[in-house]
Image (cartoon, rainbow, N blue to C red; front, side):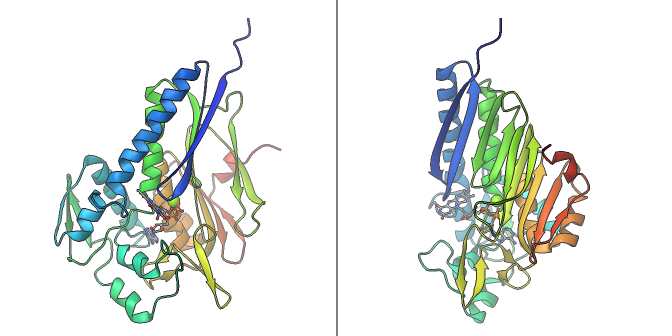
Length: 310
Ligand code: FAD
Ligand code: MG
């Protein structure tokens, strides 16, 4: 006798400044309900730890401290991964851009281009060497440094939500936090098909991939930006200049974890197509699609293996 069609449960919430959507498949509606709400609880718990918008978070405490301090194991795990990508990307990925993000005011009503001195000042002391980690102890090289995990912590939270779904026995589902997602198992009869947002055509896609048990993460200049005198200013910064990075429109990474994909998408966005795809060679099991500033698409060698069959 044919097993009954699995039930689908889909829920979404505004968290971490973005819409988080969780979908799960299974036979038992109550189990789906409790698994999804436990996954949202886990994201809420991590948001309190990792957010620069929360007064008591590890990130805010580190930014306020003069030399650093003890952090929770999860925060240390996120910072360890971020430091690895920061070093391998020669500082293109940088978790010490908190002051720079503040002067650009992307979380304010009306962000605007800050004056040159404010940017130069905010770049003082940043870089892969600016913070170090010894077990759960973070050390800052200068008191004014502000930590910002916006380029990696959302991905980490998605990974942990997937872990909670799995612990509830869910074998088919997905967690999507504003374009940073993990696809668990099948959907349910076939691989998940994911359309990659076209960076200039709102309704368009630049590619469609078929995926199972992987992370798909996109960073783009169309997510958080404003225009001034015909120029687009977005929230992914080149630490060398303090200005929005200009070599790409969007970067999509396929990886084992969303946290790694998140950090790599931001780093490759700053490095540009050539240096960016070269960085991916350090990370086996990762593939990338880069849409350059002129709209040209560049794929890593194994990307074609994920392209959806027509
Ligand atoms: P990504 O490309 O993945 O990351 C871009 C973000 O990374 C930038 O916003 C900046 O934070 C940081 N960044 C920029 N340049 C670099 C660089 N060169 N190297 C490393 N990092 C860089 N937003 C709100 O508006 N309100 C909130 O309350 C809020 N809470 C949050 C709580 C948490 C725990 C997290 C992780 C994020 C939260 N955010 C919030 C969203 C956050 O501000 C960013 O917009 C979001 O993380 C960007 O993710 P992305 O995938 O869109 O872009
Ligand atoms: Mg991201």
